[in-house]
Length: 285
Ligand SMILES: [Zn+2]
Ligand SMILES: [Zn+2]
Ligand SMILES: [Zn+2]
Ligand SMILES: [Zn+2]
Image (cartoon, rainbow, N blue to C red; front, top):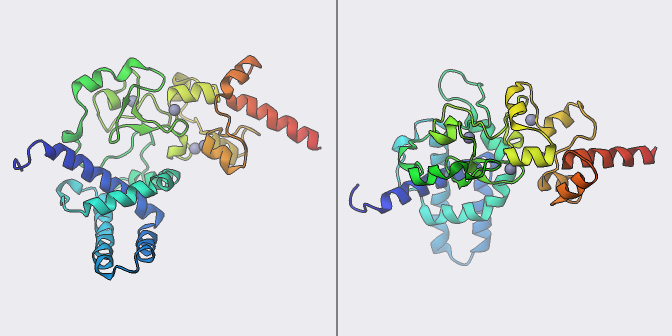
């Protein structure tokens, strides 16, 4: 400590990111794949493959620390450059499995084994005090109510639709305003059925893409995300219209379809899609 002074914050931030990404990798079971790829990619350099393999083993060690809820004393010497490279390369894939990771880190470590935290109050199991955004930054949090104005890689909560990891823009959100991690975020939804990141939507996306109001969702303790509504067959043709989810069904992402939807008198893009799918189904009959 002290020796590097100003770089301390940067270091700890980086370490947090590294362990976050490693947890993601672990949840995907990708560490092995990475090491295999590396050994294939550089077979001509035996000198280098040995240390690389060592690094991979250490990823495993830090992964179990991440889950153990007592990360505070984690050593800062996790292989830095290499794991950063892994994480960048794999970031895209990690996003797809975010819900899987969440389910894992959401379960409380002590006592309640299977208890799930709501997805709009994800557990941050490390000492966050040094990483808090400055008061100046926090003061512009509510400049945009729909999506929030402050991007934060640690405290932000990623919206399933717009994928922006931001603090919310709700004036009275204790989680984002006071960074009280025991509170649920008021500006992001939590699905009562899956409690996964698939059910996390910001105010703006909730309204434009699904025609719902944050206040109503917050009050409705039985609110479900479009994925769960579809899975349970509650509302036929009510589907998630995020570009990822549409791609998965081989449908064209709707982009700025909200203008088209509103012009045609629909409440949201999801309503427009529901009608389209319904009509297509009728025509097939
Ligand atoms: Zn959003
Ligand atoms: Zn919030
Ligand atoms: Zn759900
Ligand atoms: Zn979706």
